[in-house]
Length: 118
Image (tube, rainbow, N blue to C red; front, side, top):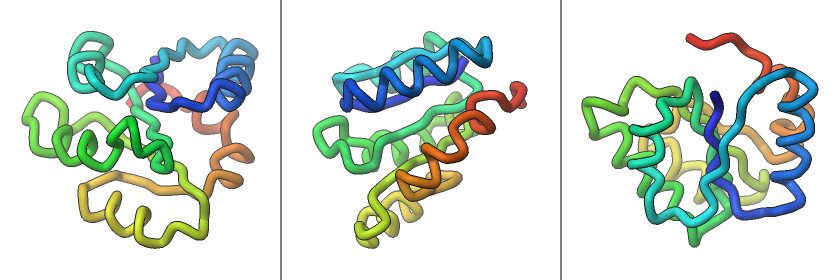
């Protein structure tokens, strides 16, 4: 299962459609208030963050994950507009495992969702 922390409804539909074609279960966290609890409960093989969705507090959540012994091993991936260098730097400083430009994430969506559990 892949958990996506996103608030863009149209992008969520695109991801959900791709996941259905691949037979991959996805779950969406759209509020940002219970993300850590959702990760603990769902135990995803990957957590994907929309780093441009400031109201979801993705940078803070990544930092909290990487400081939590129970969650630090969960792989994280963030996507962001390529022009937001400050957001990319902040995500890396928080400990995110991988950052992709939004367009690269969309291009690689099938590969990202289709990867087997680690």
